[in-house]
Amino acid sequence: MTAIDDPTLSIDHARVCRAAARIAPAHSDFMDQHRAWYALVGTNLYYVRELLAQATEEPAPDVVTSRKILDALGFPVFALGYRDLLDHGHPAHRE
Image (cartoon, rainbow, N blue to C red; front, side, top):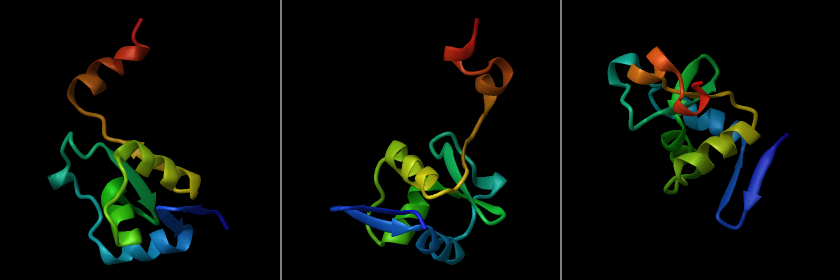
């Protein structure tokens, strides 16, 4: 089992799954560009920071750290694509 242990955060896959069961999953009616990173737990998507805050019972790390932790624990992580990103792709990937 993969676990993340450091002086400020101790978490494992099972703890994240239990946290997901306690919070409402993301819903398309409430998506916004300021909540762009989501993790798939079971069949639902959860905002990465909200999920880690629930799992650790502490303030979540920043978005980059949160998504890296969830990825390291084996959860698929997704970014929300919208407007220009969907029409033209990521600016760094354009020709």
